[in-house]
Image (cartoon, rainbow, N blue to C red; front, side):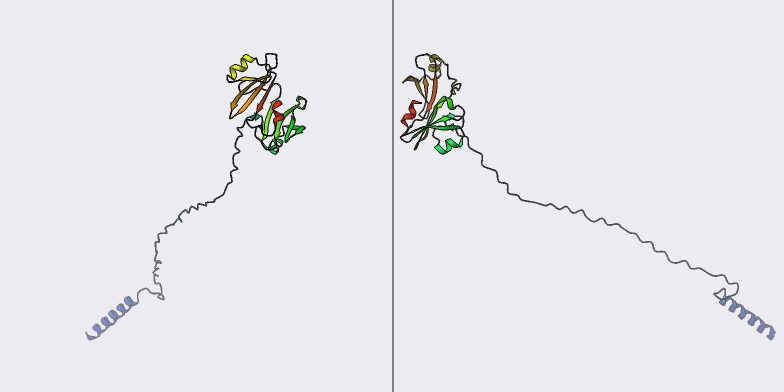
Length: 204
């Protein structure tokens, strides 16, 4: 009996050993156990950088040329009563110097020299008389060939003057209308209120 018990104990102990060793790395016929690597799930968030708006401000200085003031003085085209000789020459309307007497210069018009002396310029007063060429009309519509009746209707204040009529039109400026004995206007002149030292120009 005692021997039997020992054998059983040995066998039981060996069985326990076998169980303890079980399938291992080096055991014959052992079944290997594969450990799967740990899987980590990471969430990636894409960050879009903000849009930057750059405003560039540029300051420029623009020089606007001064608007040329209209010359409202009475005259013929660009040639105005009261202009200095230099201003009158700059218009390009003055032709040749026809006569110079006692501080007064008489010029022909460049566009119609055959018309004779047409512009009187005083040394101190500037342009004092302009004789308008044939075909020109006043702002009232009076021109060469207009009747005396039309003249008086256009210029109710016209008064007999030398060989025609004279009417004051603006700021002392007068319009001289030569009629002679034909009954119609034969010549027209604009005269400054201040002829100054250019009396000979009054006869244009």
